[in-house]
Amino acid sequence: MGFTITNSVVDTYKGGYSPEDSRRNIENDLTKLRKQRDDYEQQKDANDTTAIDGKIASLENRINNLQQRLDKLKSKEDEKDNGECQTCKNRKYQDGSDDPGVSFKTAGKIDPANAEAVVRGHEYEHVNRNQAKADREDKEIVYQSVIIKHGICPECGDSYVTGGQTTTVTRKASDDRYSVGMKDSESGKLLNVLV
Image (cartoon, rainbow, N blue to C red):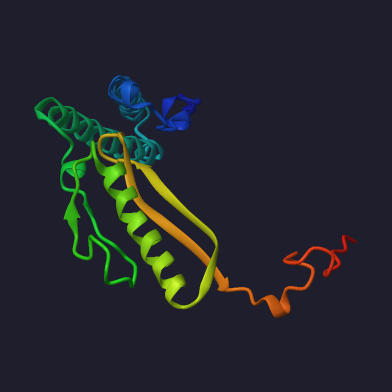
C-alpha cells in the first residue's frame, strides 16, 4: 500500500495568532497534529516502512514546541489572573547619556501608569540643560525636539514606554558683520535679494 503526504496543518502552520486566539488555536493545532501523527504510525505499522519515521519525528518535534507554547500561554494567563506582568513589574529605566546632571543615572523603577510623564520630565531636563549650555557657549538653538518611544511587552502584550530621546542642534550666535542680507537692522541700508 502506498503512502502519500497531503497538505495538512503541519505544512500550513504559521503561528501568527492574536493573543486572544492563541490558546484555542494552539490547542486545535495540537489536536490535528496528534491525529496526523497517529495516522502516520498506523500507516507505518501497516506498511512496515521506515520512511514514515522522519515524518513522525517531525510531528513529535512540532507537537512538543506547540505544547511548550501552550504551557507558556497558560502560565501567562495565571500571572495575569494573579496581578500584573512580571516583566512590566520589574522594568527599570536608566539614563544613557553622558550628562551627569540629570535624573536616572542609576536604574530605577517607574510606575507604568506614570512612565510617560516621568520620562518626558527627564527628557525636558536635557532640554533645559542644553539651553543653558548654549547660552554659556554663546550659541543659539536652531532646533530642539523630544521623542517618547513606546514598545509592546513581549510577555503581556501591553504598550509601555521604552525611553526617550532629546535632540538639540545649535550654531554659533550670529554676528551682524557676517549677516548681510539676513537681518534688516536699518531700513534702506541693506539689500535683500531673492534669487
